[in-house]
Length: 337
Image (cartoon, rainbow, N blue to C red):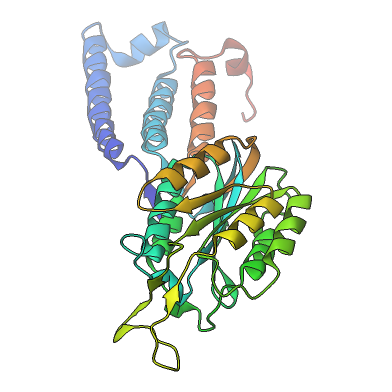
């Protein structure tokens, strides 16, 4: 698809017919003025070096140059391209617990909604960093591959809910292992994992997984969300109950969350109804050493001004060397008699 980035400049093309009219008027006025001095054939004999055709040629060259200049400043664009931009930043992958227990309302408005709010504000505070998103319950899945597209990151957040993963549980270890594989392999930037979970239904060796990640230089931070006292899990028909009909209470497994953070050489903070956890996490990320990160930026249109610009430059140089008078040396050369 072809377009002009600054299409309003195309109105300047209306100058071209005005220039043409002015040139024709100028040449006719000049011709009338010469006729006042005598016969044109006699005047031509008195001015043998005057090259009238060159005057026309120079005008048409400048006429075309004016049109090309307007096209260049209008910014012709065509097709698409993918640009690689190098910036200073870090890589962050967030592992978000989406198990049913995250629907508990012991943190307003719910554990999951509070976690999504924290992530949204975290994305707002990112500058040149990359972020990825993994959701997990009984298994872990990549929701958003690591990217610098913060708009997409916030868009994916809004669609997260427990129904997106059929297998219930809290496979934190699987999430850490998947996050470790999801970083950009060629980047030397600092990498960190952020886990937001209530730590319930621990099924795999998450502490060991965090320890292995730390040995590879990837820190593991944990935000524990929920209350230690416990809270029921809301459903469409009231609250979740066990097979005996008793109401199930979900509690924050803070001990497990702290062990994962210690093994991963990262931060642990408990999420409550304040912003303290977010502030602590942001402070921890700010400590990370920013290094060069390659960001792929998609541009829907590629600039195509170079071709008319080169033609414009060539014509201007050509016009500069064209004289109004005949060349004495070249006029003596007669290839045909």
